[in-house]
Picture 1 (spheres, rainbow, N blue to C red):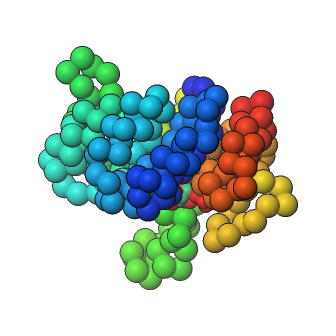
Picture 2: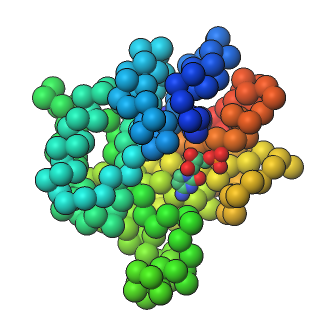
Picture 3: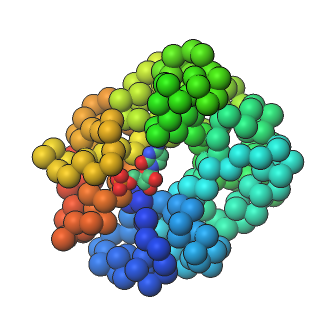
Amino acid sequence: MGKDVIIALDFENREKTLSFLDRFTEEKPFVKIGMELYYAEGPAIVREIKARGHKIFLDLKLHDIPNTVKKSMAVLSGLDIDMCNLHAAGTKAMMEAALEGLTRPDGTRPMLIAVTQLTSTSQERMQEDLLIREPLDQVVMHYAKCAADAGLDGVVCSPLEAGKVHETCGSSFVTVTPGVRFAGGDVGDQVRITTPEKAKEIGSDYIVVGRPITASEDPVAAYRRCVAEFVG
Ligand code: C5P
């Protein structure tokens, strides 16, 4: 699995997104389109960014009954994206249905990865609100194992969990990790963070980087620094 840096395009509209991407004249970074931009601009923004030559991770985190997820995944697959995701909490049946829906008539499909427990969910909230009694790290590993059993390609997880996910689910099971900051950089609202260099050491396959690149005065230089540290 080729390591890569994915830029989180957390912008509110097409204009801001494209003017950001226009700054990249030499490289075509792998980008992540999340709910905010997708709900604002719809599938047209996905097609437009794809036509510019970028690989796309469509981060919509589907979670519904298997039949609905299957049909929705078929629609997303038709957008020619490279990676998308769902909540492992939807069960193995939902994940298997998603894979079926995602598979194109020619047998190809985007990578499918699962969200385990959101990093915004604490041990306490998981126990009190979700009535899940096991320790959070065990729950994350169990969800990752379910995703692997269902045939998914990997999970979104904290870089600090990437090594354990590989131990549990195998080295080819992909880890996509947000929460990356440069040494000495602004942490913002992220709590469990690591540097691109450390993420590489722990074994992340893809790092998702937003503000350290998008809010930088020189996003291209920040992106190149990430690639140099993470991919080498
Ligand atoms: O700006 P920053 O680098 O914190 O952006 C990280 C990106 O990864 C955001 O799009 C955020 O929604 C996403 N993400 C995350 N933590 C997760 C899952 C997704 O930060 N557990």
